[in-house]
Amino acid sequence: MKSRPVIAIVGRPNVGKSTLFNRLLKNRKAIVEDVPGVTRDRIYGSFEWNGRTYDLIDTGGLDTQDPSSLKQSIRQQVQVAMREADIILVVVDIRSGPNALDADIVRLVRPLGKPYYLVANKSDNARAELSAGEFFTFGVDHVIPVSAAHGRGVGDLMDLIEQDTVFEDAPEPEPGAEEPVRITFVGRPNAGKSSMVNAIMKEERLLVDAVAGTTMDAVEVPFTRGRRHYILVDTAGLRRKKAVEAAAGQRRTAPAAGLEKLAGMHAISAMERAHIVVLVLDADRGVHEQDARLAQLAVDRGKGLVIALNKWDLVKERRLQDDVRQQVKDQLRFVPWAAVVNTSTVSGHGLGQLFDQVLSAHDRWNRRVPTAELNRFLQTAIELHHPPMAGKRPLKFYYMTQPQVRPPMFVIHANRKDVPESYQRFLSNHLRETFDFPGTPLRLFFRSSHGVDHEK
Image (cartoon, rainbow, N blue to C red):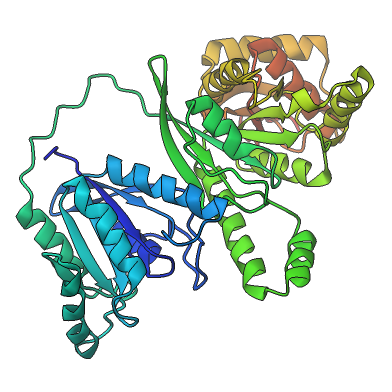
């Protein structure tokens, strides 16, 4: 078996697959809620056990008897995960005992010819473990009682997997390998985020449904384009708090509001880990205040930003196209430096240009300007627009540095740090124009250098 095996976790809804996933990863990457159907897409993670790294796939609840389109789509996702896996964990609920759905899933797994283990979850104590033997009626070789919620038996499960498996030697890492570019797609529900990731990958990697809320977890998808490696992160559609509460009230399901709130927290967490955020707008529905909030979240977190004006193929009339463009300018006027790309996930229009803009934003987000060039810029800016007075004495700038990137941060040392906002904007805009910084926010700070200027 390869040096880094892939383990897929499968099972019917609400048996604790995501809880086991989180337990092995030692974090809450997958959303866990006592409501069937929370996990829908394939969720990936990795963890170490006894010095060896394993890749782990969490999957949606598999219901072989439900003919609905969403359940059939989840089944396709599970089947892909099982094909990718080297080892399969079939999770059952020991408290409810064997049932027909569990048996169906075992019958789906067995013909694959891969090592699989039946994991009897929710074995919270020794008494509960006594029921594990009932599952041998499925004709399985292993039934391992665990409590994913409390960690009971999980180590025994991994020890058994390690004992049964012969591993290859790990390959040497390629010299000069770059870290993948993390691109997180955010937007309101049904803006087309999942469809965009699928179109980029040219496969139905993520679930797409007309019903808002199909994506709940933040789903990470590795992707290679040319020689560059990426991680594409699809997120739940984010709505205003009032809209979430109103929708939950109409459905009379309080857990739905809590679940959507949790999905939103995962989306924001994914944004914080991103390098570049792609804000996906639905051109057919126009630009709304919530879109501006999402853009502001990306800026506040110092992320590169590219705007995808999606479903452009649905906006046929020139007058409507001009109206949408004006909405983008008005609602997102605080990010004029973010590229706006018209896209269609149906035709693929604009997706190549979108990637070009993402790479440009990533390059500028990581860009460091030599100190000598910064100080030449500062001198030119002062000559172009003299600094205003700071109280009763002139404002003086001494030198400029760039202490960090991601995003680029600049510090100007002066005789005072309370520089008027209008002059701060002038310097920031001139800095962006001079050094060509599209797609990334800039941080500009002023530091009072006492002792350099003794003028009173």
